[in-house]
Amino acid sequence: MSKVKYYYDSETLSYRKIEPKKGQKFGIAILVLIGLTITSAALLLIYLNIPQLETPKEKAYKRELDNMKLQYELLNKRIERDEQILKEIADRDDHIYRLYFGAPPIPAEQRNAGFGGVNRYKDLEGFDHSNTIIKASEDIDKLTKQIVVQSKSLDEIAELAKKKEELLATIPAIQPIKNEDLRRMASGYGWRTDPFTKARKFHYGMDFSANRGTPIYATGNGVVTRADANSIGYGRHIRIDHGFNYVSLYAHLNKYNVKKGQKVKRGDIIGFVGSTGRSVAPHLHYEIFKNGKRINPRNFYYGSLTSQEFNEMLKASSLINETLD
Image 1 (cartoon, rainbow, N blue to C red):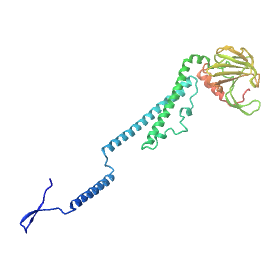
Image 2 (image 1 turned 90 degrees about the vertical axis):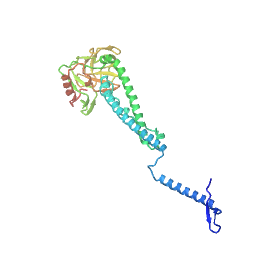
Image 3 (image 1 turned 120 degrees about the horizontal axis):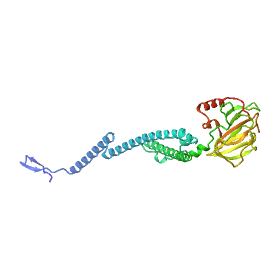
Image 4 (image 1 turned 180 degrees about the vertical axis):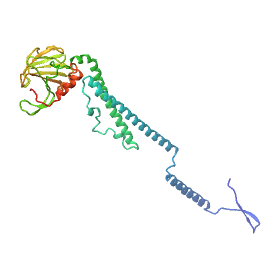
């Protein structure tokens, strides 16, 4: 109940009730409303200009964002650690496991290939921490691909390990002629002088000088795929398929001791030294193919030479001299 106010009237010597003037209540209400509006606007301006002032919900969102950013940073660190571990595994795979089983190393571009073309992370752009999220996504995708490549390599190594015994028996591993004193090495693999043109030419095999009729030995188990004189320059020659994508070639023979389709074992006499085809003197020209490409035969004599003899053979095969074919 509102209070009633009175005033003392000295003329009548009595108290009289104070009556509010017409429109006074409305004016007071307007003033109160204006005052509230001004006060609210002032408080809003103060609120907007104090960045430290946050609502509880905003604080919760900020904590959640900070936590997510921290988690992504930790994730990136774990990815970097896993990448380093995978790199060490890949190094051992290329330089120990694959080398041991005669498999070529996996090219770096195959291991580290990225994802070109379409932007795979477009949906992650436009956020406050897009760079962090995109980097983590890229690293995970790259790591996943490298794991797939490494997994396939280990599957290949596991398969080769099962066939290791057969591989060791078939891979070319001895010299094709007896060469105890190592003086029969006439020319090695690489750039050499052509005996006919005197120009520099790449020599894809090794030449062993020997008397006509000197026995030639199969350097590994396999099947004779050719024993003919139908390749230009080689004269009478023999090719043996050893399996595992290895093929050995013996050229300039005087005569054969095997025929096409015949199975041979390492150490079997397959023919005899001659000077047929493009040759300046009796000798054996010897080549090894891996996956259809000629490779240096000097790396395949571990089955017939000591370490000292092998080092001497390396020196002899490295001499830049004239070939015999």
